[in-house]
Image (cartoon, rainbow, N blue to C red; front, side, top):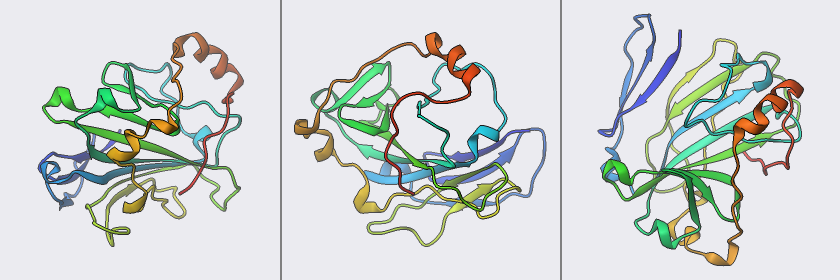
Length: 217
């Protein structure tokens, strides 16, 4: 069984569980066409090394490689209108997916093939400090857009093993902007490579191997 969190472009949010009929709980947020810079989704995993593995990476998967397993890892996913991708620090090295030169915390997904001059920007948050969580868990959330600060509610799914569901969220003033993407004073070259060459070695050792990404929940 796989739980799914659906966020439709109309702003309709709902959850489903494959193969099981569950009580229907929905939320209605602003349609995506009315948003220009806002976080819409968040995903958090606690004790990720104990979560089930689905084997080999699939096309479209995005991962990071670290010196050690974080206690918690989160992704905050924001929508950003940005019509000048080619004139920015965005490097689309994998079709409609890529990185931001000089930014080790974010990956981007180009939405132009879906008829919109926008990006989905996912920021990774890592926490290495030991916590009171002793069971692995996953929390997924959809958020309403706010002009300032953080929202006062959210649509949240979490594992039954979660002692205290953790939300990955950025304050509205922390979200990356078009001006940030167009600031070439922070640009650094982006190196690309094939994950398939390293995946068997990383899998055997069970550890990530490159530099840490700065953390912050």
